[in-house]
Length: 167
Image 1 (cartoon, rainbow, N blue to C red):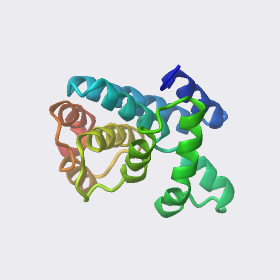
Image 2: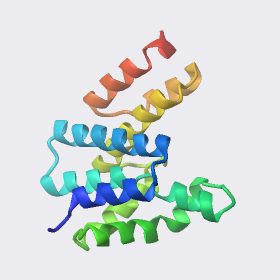
Image 3: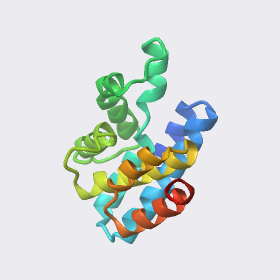
């Protein structure tokens, strides 16, 4: 099967070895990214790329914690993302043409101030909403985060998430 998303998700969850926070984070970002892609009516190809990137968006954290003395900084993650993402995608039989697009999304999903394409925007919004539920931001950070959002669905869900912080 080409682009075996089920295999990709399963292998990433197994890779995380039951780590509670990271496993739940992956599942939540994946679900929101899927929702946002469907709301925005992106193409089937873009939806597959977005959902794979959502599954893999934090895959480098575990590796960095194990190989960089616990330092999972963005710089360290970006050093290993390409190799890790490629391995997971190849094992799930993703089309080679998808691989660089997914790597780019994973690498850039925290680059909030740089120009974004539609898929990166959707991935960022999904990840930011989940992050805000997991780690409540203060008022100043909430105001900064709100400015990143561009989609109607993302704005609405983020407003619900931040309701207490911005009132």
